[in-house]
Structure formats: C-alpha cells, structure tokens
Image 1 (tube, rainbow, N blue to C red):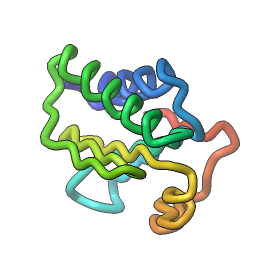
Image 2: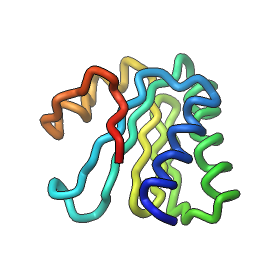
Image 3: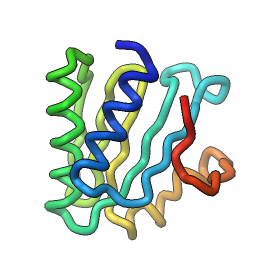
Length: 114
C-alpha cells in the first residue's frame, strides 16, 4: 500500500475513535527500518485498546500488511511494515517521550503531511 494512503488510513482510524494528541513523524533519513511513526494517546486502558483495534481493523480491510501487534495495558505498538503506530496512555507517553527521543520539533498543527 502506498505510504500516503496508509498514513491517511491510520490517522482516520485514530480520529474515528477520538485519539488524542496525534502526531505523525517522517522517519526517512533518521532510521532505515520504517518510513513513518504515528503516535496517539488514549484516555484509558480500554480507549488505548479501542484505538489500536481500529487501526488494525481498517488496515486489514484495506489490504495493508499488519506485521505484528504488541500489547500492554498502557501501550500498544502496531507494526504496519512502513509505519509503526504507538498508542499510549498519557503518563506512559510522557515517560518515554518518543518525540524528544527522536529530537523532533512538534509542528503547531501536530500532524505532519506525508
């Protein structure tokens, strides 16, 4: 699946279930194993799981490759081959601070275009 289409599908799936603080990061030139990373927050354990389920369901329906899903109570990682999706509780997201790890400047509108 084309990167832009997959990215849009992920964003739509997260927005459909009211994901919070959605950020998309272009990883090309930073790391060779993925092209994009999408990060979103959920308000509770159930919300995190619902967000992740929405992404996986829409990706599979669209024919995207779901390489794997790693689940924890506070964090779900979805590997869609070219894009990794992280869905976390706010405290977990703040602790790991993936945005800072990759030394990113967060744009004002939060979601970068592909």
